[in-house]
Every structure is written in C-alpha cells, then in structure tokens.
Image (cartoon, rainbow, N blue to C red; front, side, top):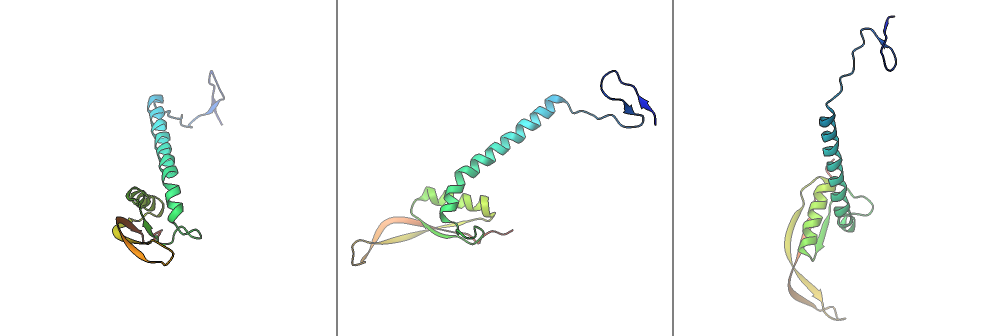
Length: 124
C-alpha cells in the first residue's frame, strides 16, 4: 500500500478521497440556526408543559382530554399544549356556567363564560 507523505499530520493512503470541508461561515450559521430552533422548542415546551400536565390524564397523557376552563387565555394555552404534545387539534367551545352559592347546593347562573377544551387524544 502506498502512502502520501504530508507536511503536517498523519500519512494518507493513495486513492483515499480528501475530506471536503464546508465553508466555516456556512457551518457556523447552520449550527447557530439549529441551536436557536432547539432553544425555541425548549422554551415553548417549558411554557406549555404545566398547562398540559394540569389537565392531561395523570396515568396516560395520550388519552383524550375533556376539560372545563374558566379563563380564555388558559383555554387557548391548553389548546396549543394539546397540539404540541398530542399532535391533534383541540376544540374550544364556550359554555355557560352554573355554580353552587351556598351549602344547600342551589345553582345560580353566572353571566361569565367558561370554555370546554376537548381533544381526541394522541394519534401516534
């Protein structure tokens, strides 16, 4: 076997292709973009995980979700979390709320809306 002598480094076998290095600027940009996307993903996951865990089935997160949420922002956040973790589109529908007002259990209509957030569960 024949080897080429190189000034620096180890000898290279004849016929073996030389590695083609990518332009350092291009490689640095690609690595920076990749790390930014990973950072965005981790930030998004950190924001959505607490909402998802609050309403998801504790034994199996893949199960369908049917939750009543009193705050519209939380309903929207839950819908985004369901799409992120389960990969399905969540449905948000406004509902009227009746709440007990005393120990007798009498229900009173509250003029505030609540939101039912439902999903079919993980489709994997």
